[in-house]
Length: 385
Image 1 (cartoon, rainbow, N blue to C red):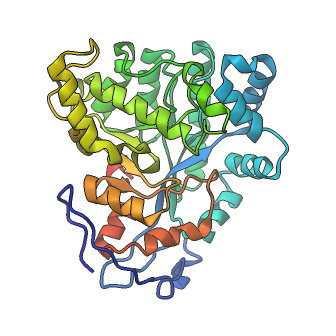
Image 2 (image 1 turned 180 degrees about the vertical axis):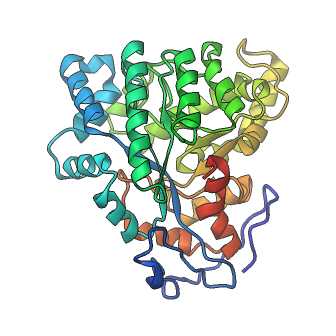
């Protein structure tokens, strides 16, 4: 089986043959191992499945979310009320998720073993601390990062983590990112897209990018529900969340960063998007074409010439994970246009915990070397695992 070529734009070879009969979900010899290895069908090396977008929420943050739901009207943040009003409710799905999302012990490890996941990259679920006032958010981020670090120490070969930070206070956010990396051993930061309707393309937030670049760690731009000014058309048909709204809002945020010149100002800044890049890889041609036309026409005050094409920043400064997108055609397309070194496996636990979905990646018609990159090596490189 030929490997996907590193050249962007190369279409992957297809192979309809299923490998499910030849590769068990977990290598039987390693079921008792703490970091199971999976052996591919070919001569390539064994690999570990590292899941790079896995959520966590301790009881304290859930209690604070519940208090916000009680104290704030739905008009304050309709998306927050929709998301956490549901997951803090009494349905079977909500109860199961809340149980799993708080656990960084035996329950989660058992779920990982059931799906052959060797290691999770864990971080605070959306919207993180970004719904609170600045003082509360800064204090809470420190407490939660300390707690996450202590939990990781109990199972250092199974978990790694990203720091929660409070963009409401950019200077404090930059300091907490530095503390998280240098003192707590965390591997970067998560920012859950907009912060109360504000976006990181505003230069007042760029201290955060400066810190991430200096530290050499990535920022994971994770979805949030659309802010009040954007959400109304989504709500009527239930489209504000993972089904569509998350991708629209987060993809918009990344494009704002690109067009604002963030990556010209911080050329070594690394960022990560989930869900196969929130749709952006499928728009690369049109983004480049239309941006060039807009700059030539001098149509918008906020759109100026960049050092590179928009799509080049998305290929050079951004990595994407497969979280929630276990669909072979989409994964293969993304690999073909971004390159095998830019795509990382993720499950999106516990929101989308379907153990057998790992078979989609197991059975992709790619080489074992490329599969090891997708499952293991890219995550180890991007997050310094």
